[in-house]
Image 1 (spheres, rainbow, N blue to C red):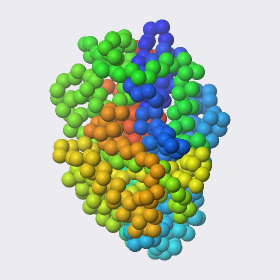
Image 2 (image 1 turned 60 degrees about the horizontal axis):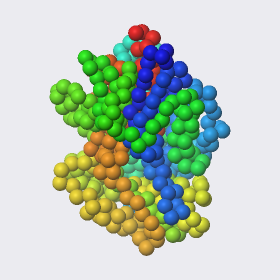
Image 3 (image 1 turned 30 degrees about the vertical axis):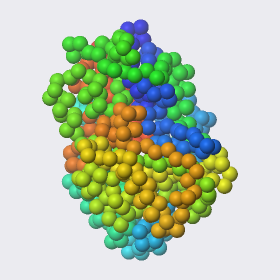
Image 4 (image 1 turned 90 degrees about the vertical axis):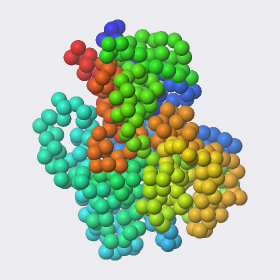
Length: 496
């Protein structure tokens, strides 16, 4: 097969690496081109002044997806990537001063809910049954199958899902779905938050996304020893062992096609022939910047609403705070208002929810002795006119210090070093559509099910992998998108 086919992968994020591995293990000739000097896309790392930071995903869920990829390629996670189960998975700080530890151990979690709101203990169990039912019905179709391929969808085992649509709750919003189970608004806020895992607004996204809590509580949340970036190291090593040619610092300017068929790419001014291209760049950016396509298709793509973005502060902290855990959330008092400011006003929130990950909890070497490495993420809008990011960053920094101080954490004078990432950086570094982090939002009942497919309908030989294509954002889903793109490409070779 390899003599006839030359495959170029544009972008070395997790989706591109996953595709490269799946294709190379079938003996195909694969070249991966990445514009940055390091692979991994948004899953990256940064070191400064003795501190190490993961700059992207900070939690691993559905570890079996990674296992399947490694096993298929003849590797073993146990050797390369030891996982640490996080317990508690997250510590929540509510505006009223209540602190809540979320656990993937069911007995622990039920006990914690009972302490917070006794009336909601059975509601939580009913909510998890509901979340699991959505997972059982939708995962085979929406997570593990390229849903745009009718040949695959109409297999008899998937028909159950198509006939059980009401059970996957597509007509309510995430918030409406959650609110049915809980009396205490703090529990509602806690489970509304999962809509942000794919960059959406809980008051607009379909309740089908209530699948996400089951994925986290049912399968657990993990950290990779040595940092999340070790996954990129392991996948890069595996791709190279399988014969993938990896070139970094190479910017692809155009994906070339002729007569509706892929002919190659232009990178750094030079044309490189290819029979197939897997595009791991954002699907919308690909159609506006990399592909010459009809204006109507370009317009259709740019109409898709981008997901949330964020402002990230990487802080080396000259102190330790034993009251904090590996993952921490400081909730704002008006969650609906926060999303209105982000999605409607397209401004950074005046009273943001603050997420803090401290990996030095698990890996002491990530910070100097007596210090901590803080990854601080605040939800922010995608890029739009009339935004002033230097002012917005200053405002958010002040807000974060204020919120932490309200909970008894005085950190403003403890920041030894800082690096800031804004939506502008996500656009520049990773080609994210308007600086979004999770690709396309699911802020309508249909967009959650209309994410761009893994195979181009307009150009033969072009495939898509990454968080902006099916099945969506988040580490396991991006790995699956790479697998689906590779399988569809392999299919085309067999049926050619």
